[in-house]
Image (cartoon, rainbow, N blue to C red; front, side, top):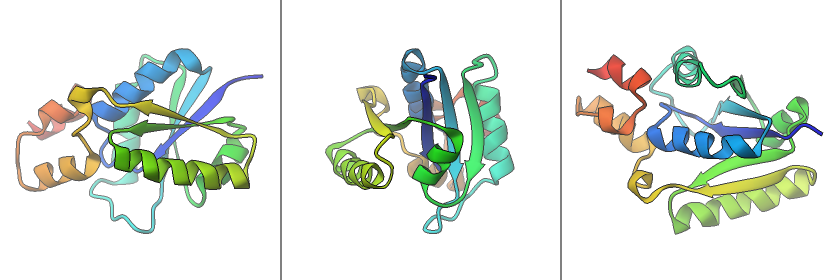
Length: 155
């Protein structure tokens, strides 16, 4: 059976922290789908097209990684893609508590999907898309937090 993982998020924008989680998870899976979800509680700074383009650029040399968008519940997307794993990054204890709750609910809805939590590296744990968006809005220096493929757009 092929090991397919879905890494869901808004990726608005994708950060070095996100990229690190994907790269560290690559040996575990046959395929990783970076799934850009439409979240009714978030208003994106960047268009879906920009986010997809950035992800495609960052992972252009990694055939096991693809980017897709979806609406609705992540477990429904997993079922549609025949994914048996959900991949999530953890930066803090608060992230763990939130992700644990979501993992339990997802398991109740779709027991065949296992959630895999990967701890962020300490040097990347302060990076979040929310903070990066604020730095971008404030015209701050953001290159340190973004993959070079994206950072070049803000130089």
